[in-house]
Image (tube, helix red, strand yellow):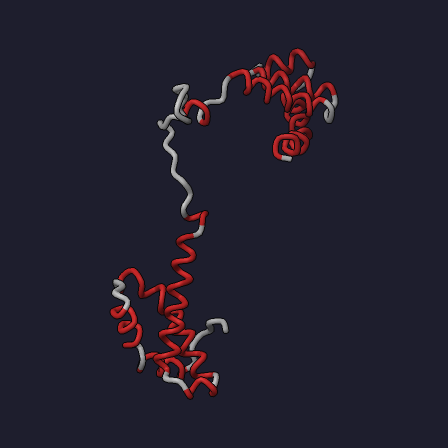
Length: 179
């Protein structure tokens, strides 16, 4: 049964029996400030069920409310114990393994210059297969850091023509870089 807004009757019933939430927290020795939000939804679920399912009236409401609050508490603890919430923490300044003197920060945080050049060349190679030669020359000059004036002079183009050529290339560049 999903939680929905309470009807007037359910709100009245919930208010009359609200003390059960605090009784439950006290019996379990749980601080209200930390666990009230955890168990209240189980309590509200019990209110709705008790008001809507006539067959439950053969039991005391407190029995159903405590059972639902225990279930909410159990689900909360299960959630906290999931592996994704308890990932091991590794410090960048920690040694990898027992020997060798290699730190995590040396492996993770630095990409060596050779790898960066290789990655750039692979991207340019992929672009070369998909773009016209003139656009590739312009891109290579831009990657190299050439000024627009130098590109315009070498390619015998205006700044506007260069910008238009680059704009036509953007979709291809984006698909190569980000798939």
